[in-house]
Each structure stands twice: as structure tokens, then as C-alpha cells.
Image (tube, rainbow, N blue to C red):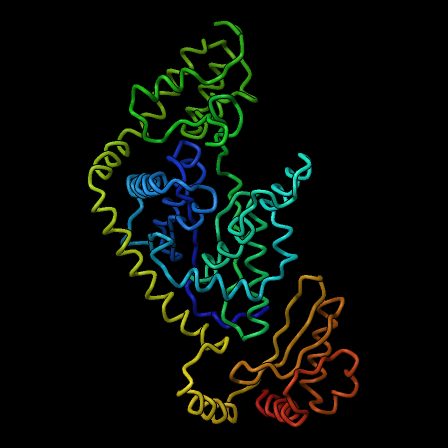
Length: 440
């Protein structure tokens, strides 16, 4: 589907929920690659602290506040430059919850019923013999819409996510398409960016490093504590001198995420030669600390100056709102939330512009997999739309027929077209005539 926002710079957007302390898995999987990407000149980058999302899963105000401070300090200590990117706190952008409501009004409940997190809660309740929606908040149910607002507000083209989050990006695309279909082209359709090379770190027990498993290694834990935690990583019973497997070794996988290729090859050889687990853990500790120690010093300094972090986030919010405030004004106009005194002038301006603006055909694909098209006047007003075609080629043929034969093609396509309430046949005929006369 063609989008009118072609002049928008290429944008990346990512966020992290403020419910915990950043750990090595967060650093390797999100913070480090995102900071590296932000240093390029090819795109605009948006990074935010998702504290509205935190309210869905945490009812401890002090924890959310502390987590926000720790995560902001972690990103800045890792090298994120607020001058190069837009770095903000979600709750400092009032247009986001407002957009969430607009998207709620165009999002089918059936789509939200299929969200993974909601389905998992329902399945868990059903298995336990409880009411399917027991302890399921409306916040959890509406989580995908809030995430959609985060993404669509800043017209993000790509959103780095894990494979378990792809569904949310697809839902954001659906919301954007539905809104664009109803109100004209306003939103960019985002793409999920899957980083296949980004490591998924195992935790102390070999499972995925996660706060829910209580198996994490905090990113900026003190040096002595870091050494103790690494010493507690689960290993097998192979004695010194016995060859050891790198496959399924949490220790080796964590080392690989921090080491260079030659360093990784050297440890692989050491495993084959029977390195003692204690010596391997010492190597891992030294390699992690080598990378983390300079950042740890910056992190500790930032944690001692929360006012500096607060000022940085507010400056980022001001930068973000230079985009979100006018865009929200555009969206309010689109859906009809307008000042009444301006209505006659707006109508007159639209009428005048409609006489000279060129109509346009838009082809798109709906959630049912079928291909549709619509005819818009120069102001984005819907004049005509089609029923579903099985292939984009069939839809394109119908468009070509209307473009070449104009009003005369309407009877031939009657079975494939759907009337738009309030739009007269004369208006459609005039638009087709204007289109054909403007075509080269």
C-alpha cells in the first residue's frame, strides 16, 4: 500500500519496560546493538522508557520509579547520545495515550483476542478451571494498542524486536491500515526488524536470562558480586582435563556474546583440551568486566545525579513533542475532532482545493488476504472502493480500466465495486475525468 509519508526520514524505534534492573541479557540483546545503531547517520533513532507499559504488570510505584532511573542511566552509560537520538520517557508524551484511544476505536476486538499475552492468560485460567478472564486487566488486553501508538506516533519504519514480539508489529500495521483506509493516509506501516545475529543469553541456570526465572546477572553489579554470580553459573560434572562441550554451555554462550572471534576460538580450543570450569569462569569474568567496568563507572556517577537524568529525559520529551503535537493535531482534524468555528472555512478550502487537486488510486491488502483499491480525491476524501480481489494483478487490471475508460468502466466493474455513503455518481465521474485528463 502506498503511503503519503514518503518524505519522512527512515526511523528506528525501540523501548524497554521499566519494571526491573537491566541485566547482561538486556545489554547484549537490546542496549548494545541499539546504541551501536544510533551512531550511524542513515536514520533517525527513537528510544523510550515504557513506563505506561510497566503499569500493566507492576503495582509498586517505587519500583517503577527506581527502574526508570536505572534503565535511563544504563542506556546513557552504555553510550547513548541524547544529542544524536530522541530519548524520552513514554509518560512525558501526552499524545501517546490520546492516539491509543483513536486506535482503539478502529481496532477489532477479535484482533486483540488473538494477542499472545492475552491468549496465554486465558489458556492458563482455562487449564486451572477458572474463569477465562480471571485476573486479566483491561490494560493487558489493550497492551498491543498502546504499543501500536508508541510506534505509529513517530512514524517508525523499523522496530527491532524479538521473534515473540513480531505479532505486535503486525497488529500495529493492521491499525495503521484501518485508520488510513477510513481517514486518509497518515501513518507509516512499520516493519519488524529481527536481528538474527543478536545473542539470546542464557542465565545462571542455563535457561533464557530473565527476571521471571530469577537467573539474571545485573549489568552493573559491583565487580566482586559479578565474580560471585559468574562462579555460580551451572556447569556439568566434567573434571579438569576432560574435554568439554561448547553446545548447550551457558558459560561458553555468554563468553561468545562478549568476546571477539579469535577469543571465542581460543576458548573453544580450551574446552576441547579440558579446561577446568573454575578457570573458564575466571576467563568469562575478566572478559565481561573488561567491557562493563568503564560503563559501570559512568553508571554509578549518573545514579548519584538523578536530576541530570531527569533533565535529559525532559529535553528528549520536548524534542519528541515537536513531532507528536502537530501530528496529533493532524489526526484530530482527520477524525473530526475540530473547532466548530473553523468548519465553514475548512469546507470552503476543501471545495476550492478539490477543483484543482488530482484524485489518486490506492491499492492495499486487507486482513482477509484479499486485495482492494480505493479512489480518493485530492484532499483524501474516499470516493469509491472495491470489494476483494484474489490477486494484486486483478485489482490492478480494474484500476487500469477505470483510468483508461473513466466513467464508462463503472458498469463493467459494478460487481467488484462498493458504494460510499454520501458520494454521488457525478462526483465519481468527475474525479475519473480529472484523473484521466491529468494523466500523461
